[in-house]
Image (tube, rainbow, N blue to C red):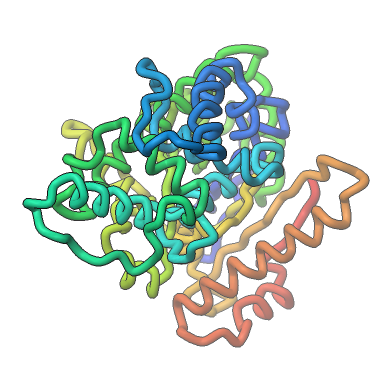
Length: 400
């Protein structure tokens, strides 16, 4: 059958793209959320080990810091932190979305208050303990906050006690950079175990077939529906799972099951005040991952896009760097309606009782995303871009 092509102003076939987030998997009942992972049998063993440390931290009694709780403990630093978040924030695991977990990572790296968890405060305690045990090394720098172990935030105290049993003092006595290097390696351990969980989930219950049908359904929101028989649908996915690679041109924004990336995005002032945290940003992590692929090249198109559909993404700040790239490919930075591509945000009413709340949240997220981009490209925030969309039809919001 002859296919009619949708032609753009320059006489070329329109370049179309589908962007999907974890909501895509959830819409086909795949158990690939952080909540599913934290409640899985595989993580249950780690939770039980973490509970021992949490119990010790809640009631230290006469136990000195550094008492060994479990000599065969195999939880990593981030396992314990997320268990701590679950213990002290009862809503965390029942609402744990991708952005929630990455927000915890972000806050733990840049927080500077005594009421929350901060890795830099954990490091200060370790450094203080090192100088107590090694007086020949000198007094060391004075901490800028309270180091009385009985008065610090319980999450910090528990992590400090745990790391003492990891022989962390000697390793990081030089500077905080070495501490962050180890912290990143621990994050990679957490990523790999989550990647293994995702791989297992997507190898059962006809995941690929259901994903294929959903992708084709979403393609219908683009100007011209594309099917596998016509041409490959280009997909940028924030999921680690993949499907029907022969039928779809899939690019993993933050890695796949073999090398998943959890990361953050830093505001300009955060990067200035926490330069050592830069290595945890998604931009840095992607470059680092590419550097290890010695015989491969990750190619991201620099061609302008004409039409994009976005589905299942929370549009949270941790991924603004990607959307800045995407909006530039759509030529939004030109502020010229004739040149700009179009975008449709597709959402799913997963709970009819909360349909108004879901719609309002979608609108709020889009507004914040576009406002940030306008600030990024013009250093002003007069909502010109949003108004251009509103009156031109270049942006639409549709329910699947």
